Amino acid sequence: MADNQAIGLSPCAAPGTVCVLGIDLGTTSVKAALVVETAQGQIVTQSCSRETQAQADSPAAGAQGMEQDVQKIIKALNECLAAFPQEHLQRVSRIGISGQMHGVVFWKTNQGCKWAKSGTGHTFQPGEVSHLITWQDGRCSSSFLSSLPQPQSHLSVATGFGCATIYWYLKNSPEFLKPFDAAGTIHDYVVAMLCDLERPLMSVQNAASWGYFNSRSKSWNTEILRESGFPLDLLPEVGDPGDIAGRMPHDWHGIPKGAEVGIALGDFQCSVYSCMTERTDAVLNISTSAQLTVPMPLGFQPPETPDSLSAVAYFPYFDGYDVLESRVYTQMINAALAQNATRLSICPTVFGERHMPEQLASVTSIAASELSLGHVTRALCHGIIQNLHSMLPFQHLKEAGVKRILGSGSALSRNEVLKQEVEKTFPLPVIYGKDVDAAVGAAMVMLHRR
Image (cartoon, rainbow, N blue to C red; front, side):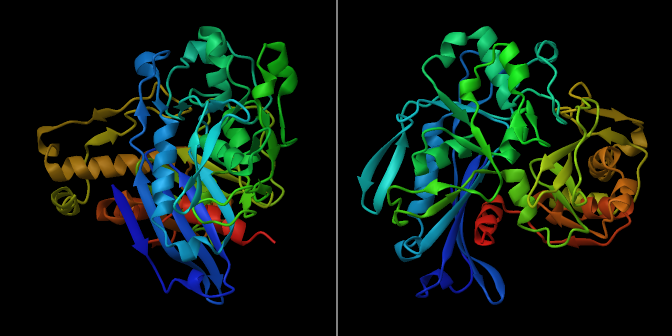
């Protein structure tokens, strides 16, 4: 399925105008956006997305595994770029790339991809590359995670984290790792291929999402990992968000040879960056998942040790400060709008939360009078917002100096009941329509780099 949009007047076509390409390698789709800065601000001149349909079997982990075929992800990326006008791509001088965090893909250095000539220049196809084990992977059970060494980090290690997955292979299938000498997230892989890097380069954003990374010192927990037999040669080098990873030694889909490629960024951070304009903003995004995010004060340092029971997680952002996050139609909405309140209570955590995986969904206070479509929809919307509020209460937002909430995401934009529940729960001005876009955010990071 394709989703192509042309927005604005295509300023990339104007002579002398610099275009930046942003790419987001998401969980289900790949998106690319061309962004240019004009006197009026940023303009997305054109965007394109492709579903990857990359879900793959996981022979080693069975039903608990969640893997994707890297061949299909790169195929979707190539199709995406091929849809852009050549005259636009030929003016691209910088590329910013983000993607799904936490996951891991393995490859063989110098054999990770194969470059080939195409009608629009060079393209690459994956070579000696494993499947992507995604952030949704569930092979690391609670008992397995408890057997791992305690990290020297403010973040606990969870299933789906890159380092946890590597530990799992060490214990359960060590022969799997033998052919590979490099590892990273899927977007780290793409950056390494585009720049022909001898060793992967990872931003502190992605490193923190892998586990066993100290965000204060910006370094891996090498001593802890070495003592437990972890293959340290698989750990990428680490750099800051906005750094240049390298220059392309080939042209790519018409993008000129020598274009700068930024170090790969976290999709979460890029999504926030694409819409947060003030440090006193909070970003509420409700789509496939739900996140409520606020920036921390300049100079903030996260705790030195993880709190596995805390719903609040701190992630490295840009410019030296962090962000904290807590995880989580028509007939239904109309029925719920007519139902202002209900005693029915729904806890919507079907998949649990990362800090409380055992907290599954539940329905309580069930009565015959509370079973209408309006009651159920109202209770569900209330439960979604209350779950977010339980993890990051209004009082915390107030203490952080938040003055307004930017509401985004398709579920929120189309659901008036959710909006009502947000406004009842968080007594702050709420601005809707500030949709997050990781591809645009990745481009903006490179656009603002001086």
